[in-house]
Image 1 (tube, helix red, strand yellow):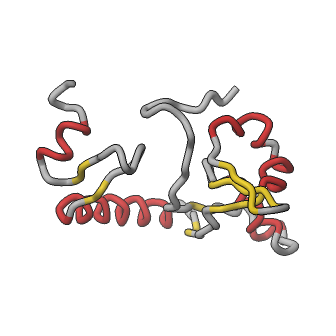
Image 2: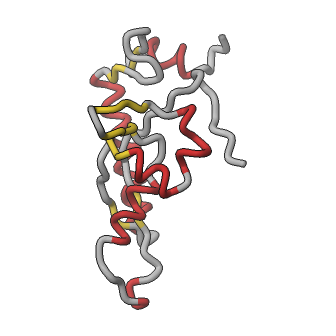
Length: 136
């Protein structure tokens, strides 16, 4: 691995470490969590300056919602999905369907547009480490 690789630098600088029991994520140590929050604060202030409003959406959404949004047919092979009796769910691999639900929650006036949402939520994808979703 390259000496500039974050997987090498993170543990060396005591920012974070990764381990097999938590694939695709990190255990943030105090120094890394501080740096993470500083970067998050900077991004938050820039997003607010650009007119975005911060929201939080659920981590778990029904399969029916993913089907209606069109994401299921394209991305289901990369989603963590499971059933609870009669109902099927998936952990969110992206934020957009949740943001659409927030927009649809009530009738909006054209005066509210453009409506800009941002979120610091976690997204969960079932894919090899380091891969990107094919957005064809």
